[in-house]
Image (cartoon, rainbow over all chains, first blue to last red; front, side):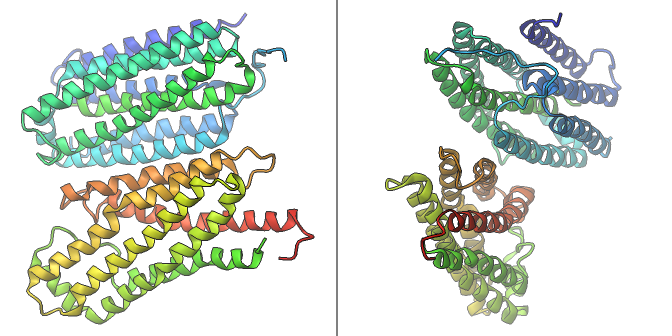
Length: 91
Length: 195
Length: 234
């Protein structure tokens, strides 16, 4: 019953393109206007969501031994939080 | 010897590629994470400069490169899947297109850097451009290696004798390319988009 | 199989790491003297601490030879992978020996600065500059050692490989981490100056850890060789 791997990967690609477009818009004033701190936070979060899909579905970590997958999931969260934190130092 | 293309039992975890390549990938991710952190920290100390200099970047080139690399990564995933299920012609075609995508990225990068250098913006101009050239430069080196790896993978699937024994190599190489994609996704956000 | 001689050469890694590190500590080179200092400030550093600096730099230079002997120990095991026609083995050995000279010449330049502290400060600073540039910008011999070792290990097709495959990838990654050293020529401050994160701290940590890791790995490989051919006298 599983959706074929191929179409899954294609759907994810489409999603990545859309997410790129969305973060592009946020980076150019859409949605948040002058509140660019929120825009940047949104951009960073979307960025790491994109990265997560790439490592889960393109790099196939979704079906990999869980310690490896966990390592990347933890890294993604830690990196996102760290960068948001460092960003906020300048805000 | 018959070529067998077993579809992985989805209940059993499967490590893509060789375990050693993951050490390399994880190491690379950690170092880039360090680089990203240092960049964002330094930026937080000179926000006005970074925002002002960021305006000088060619956003279109950045966006096109992002789309190219995402597409190239998708094509590599398709190629690996094709090789795994015996559709070698799909694998070959997708690898070729992925390589072209990678070359396209490099060509655009060439024009982008030329544009900057002609405007007298160099690695020594200020901290923003130091990071710009450094991060895109180190990424570019990864791109060159990645394109080389893709060419090698393409050669593997051109061999009519290719079978599941070779999947480990394919997955390893593909994972490296996806790593290059991941790094660029982050770089694009940090250099071009963040305000 | 010459196990004993191999072990002697392998242990030189410990000699190198300990003496070299001690040298850096005595010379107060951790962290490095900032490239952003004025000539007077650099001259002041050299004249105030001249005795411990001379001694520390001497230790650094003395430790350098062990880089060669350790490279030789690695080469012997690499040759088990490559056999008679062993280009990676020779590349690693050659690069390792050149790395010895990197430490020697860095020491020579720093000694030049410490030898007559009452020089014109500009001269002292220039010699200091040369020392740091020699040590940290010369990623080329170092990475060839690592790349050759890495590729050699990855090319091992034997049923019982001499080294585990991850060691090959580890070496390639180490090589990548040395490359930013080349950028120190552009910067006097920041993470890419010779006292910065990516030119000093990361390569420094990676370099010394590599000695410890490869020492341990090499001992394992030598031991396995001794066990696999027990009838031949060591």
